Image (cartoon, rainbow, N blue to C red; front, side, top):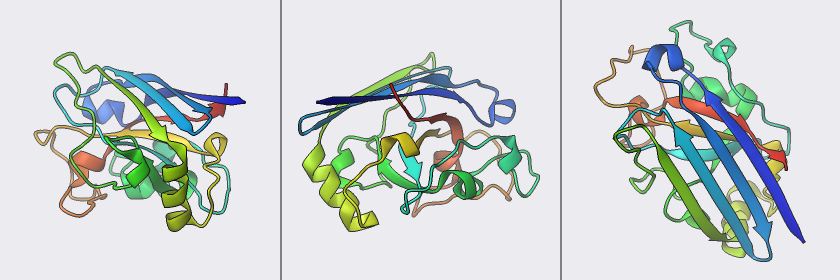
Length: 185
């Protein structure tokens, strides 16, 4: 049996970053494979873009962030401000999602036109094992998750109120630029 999911990805923080990133994501569970395809347009160009699905470990349905989540009123919805509606970062869409190693430099980089495409076939058993270690369950519950695309150039001036540093990576790397609700296709 094949399960299919999709997300229409819409801009977030577009008025502050001067771009309107948008795209689509599809997820297909087929046998022991999770097949992921994400295509983005109008992202900040020549920039690495972290991308993940976020959600709640207790199975609560995640929602996308909007400008309403700008809790400190600085005009930006930063990573910490997404948590109340979207939950925590769960699975990265990098070179090895099944390892669930989130902070690294193995994410897609947009081209000179702000376009990138990410395609990956992930061994589901390995991903589910790591997911269980982290969140106590093997069920990815894709239809209760949201996808975030992150990342702006270092040259973009961010106020000191923008949070979201992860390890050695600052808010430029983690600033959400687009988001989509994952639904059954």
